[in-house]
Amino acid sequence: MTIAENMVVTLQYTLSDLKTGEKIEATTPENPMVFLFGVGGIIPKFEASIEGLKVGDPFDFSIEAHEAYGLSDENRIAMIPLDVFHDENGKFDHEYFQVGAIIPMSDNEGNRLQGTIREISEENLKMDFNHPLADTDLHFKGEITEIRTATPDEIAHGHVHGPGGHHH
Ligand SMILES: [Zn+2]
Image (cartoon, rainbow, N blue to C red; front, side, top):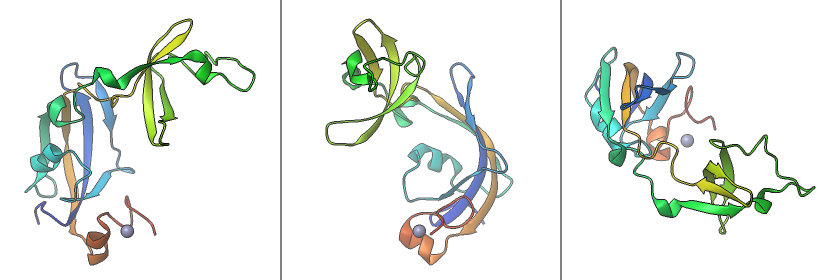
């Protein structure tokens, strides 16, 4: 059996920054990556790079930033007055709001966003709403550990059921 559309794929990987070699994240045997192949929601080049592989096959490939999480956009960086972040006592929490921290926020329409704090000045906080992995060339290394045919329910729902997937 090889990886193709409507297969449920289980794999292990380590993701690193291609340029610096720094590890970004990795799966574990208890928490592998499990997904329904070919329904989207995954970087297209990632799927293209493992299509046709079998259980036990290793992989090792890179995806440039523009084909992964994109390039950062200056328009997604905003200066926000510090008082927006004051707590009920009018205080700014310097412990929580630190440069590099990722803060959950929402826009005017209530959409959830994550912002990374880039700078904090006396009056403003410079918040970057680009994806944390924007501008990063990704290097994936790993192994395919399981492949099975998706059930009709899984194909209809567009996601995996059971271990590593949705429980409903
Ligand atoms: Zn479902």
